[in-house]
Length: 309
Ligand code: RIB
Ligand code: NA
Figure 1 (spheres, rainbow, N blue to C red):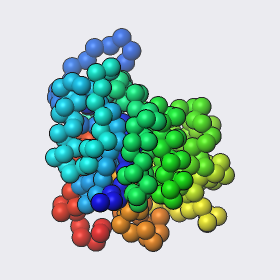
Figure 2 (figure 1 turned 135 degrees about the vertical axis):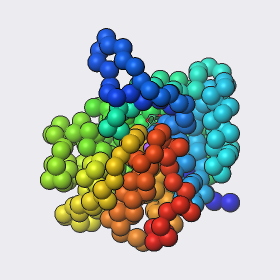
Figure 3 (figure 1 turned 120 degrees about the vertical axis):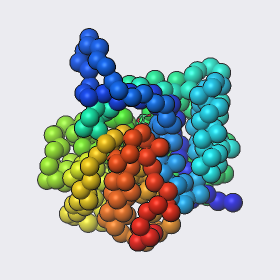
Figure 4 (figure 1 turned 180 degrees about the vertical axis):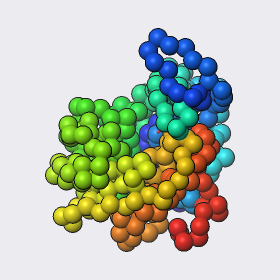
């Protein structure tokens, strides 16, 4: 049976320490809480889409280790198709060491490990599911060439694509723009890619225009508490979609929650305006920032207002 959303991307075990502030170089500080969670920018999006009711499949690679075994179980527990979740003994399951401060901001070091071993062989095996999907979602944290190849495979089969260039790399292959139906990044990524600072809504509009010129179908730039800016390819002006003011306790993975929701809306409501999808995805992500962790904070459809669906 065809799936709605295929995510080709990363899985990380999140090792999270909560502290009052982020340490400086060379400094040791006390934190007050530690926990382990399921994360990774690819898997996070897939889990959020699944919790909102999408039929999902994940194409990824984990290690043949304890973290990898647990991760596969996590996908199963969330109803994600794991047929294309590979396990390798050549590298460890990816990890993300995360520090969250009292403002809910974070600093993250990832060791991608097994994620980097996902390549074209695995993509070809997954082609039968990719070509029948409604939308394919990619990000970085795996080999960029694998992401680009996956987006192109989707496009060749008329499958919609959403690309999130995170974590940002300054020398992003220009082929990504043309391969992105929706190019969705945050203010930091937009700044790195365009070379101009992105702080205000006006800055984001300018950056979105620049990214659109590079060949993407549409552009969304997320702006944290300021919501996001949506520039649809067929329009000349962007729309600002404000967020509903919430008090953030942990913003880690909020962007992934947003994109997971966007994927669900793209798959289930193909004629909905992108601006409306973004407005709803903002609300979903707004719920996620009010609880700690990444996937542990992602809402299920049944816990959300019915008017989001
Ligand atoms: O986007 C949030 C994610 O980034 C975390 O779950 C962590 O794994 C890092 O990859
Ligand atoms: Na959260």
